[in-house]
Image 1: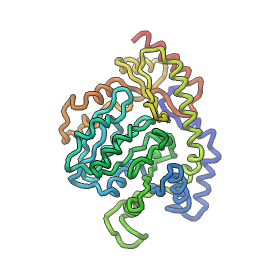
Image 2: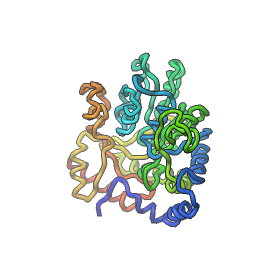
Image 3: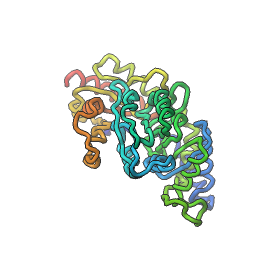
Image 4: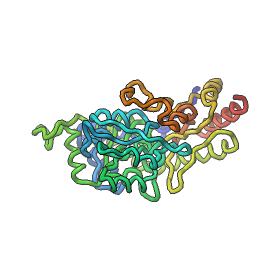
Length: 369
């Protein structure tokens, strides 16, 4: 049986009764759209992050898109972010008509190099969009100082950082707003697409709620500003609501898997993840580095192990963003990482024997490549 980077079936077997109970609750409630499950999840997710508001939407990309629009970002504006991220971060910026402006990342933790942000700010800059990547947070204090100096909002991309903390503050509570994805692979993952944008700001929350429902203040009323049909589904909300109560348990499980990798592979020439001082890592993915990455992945196929690369193509090198005119070499750290990084299997229900299989095979392969 092929070993994959992620598999939801072990978790489903353990939580099957509760998951199906969530489906039954919604189906028998008489309300399938924007009902008690969405409201309940929004209240509980906001409370988990210590903010006032949460707006559930249909996916993480739209959580970012609506977040940008709710902050007033639109055509002609610039948004500073990174290229070492999943494409949806940049797709969301492009979809509101804004231009992404990239800064490079740190070589040792793969996160935004905040020291490069000041030089990237122009009169067109409208938002700073840090990506809390792979399960840990960007260094926020200097970014917040820049935001305050230039009167710019921060929209946190928290799609990979549910429950992560930075100097005691939880991811999603440090910006003007924050966007989350509940895609099934996430630390808090659903059984389909889903997302949410959270904020402590009343006006931003009002904008978000209007934007997710066509731009209407009330149902079947008057469109105030053109919006979207981007509602979180009741079934997904009820499943997420139940899983939210187990989020800290999921994080503990991921950390246990990471600890075993660190112990078993620490004496190899793999570059293992480094937790930034002050961060509490939640290990959405367990990303390692090696200059012979491709040969390692190919050799592991003989052991029936299929690994993943997050991400093999920096966004600024993708054909769809060629119009941004970033030349090869313009983001040297990001480009070097794309040639070397890969992810080991990581999920809280990863069976111990499967992790042992990966560790043993990897150690053997590293001796020969």
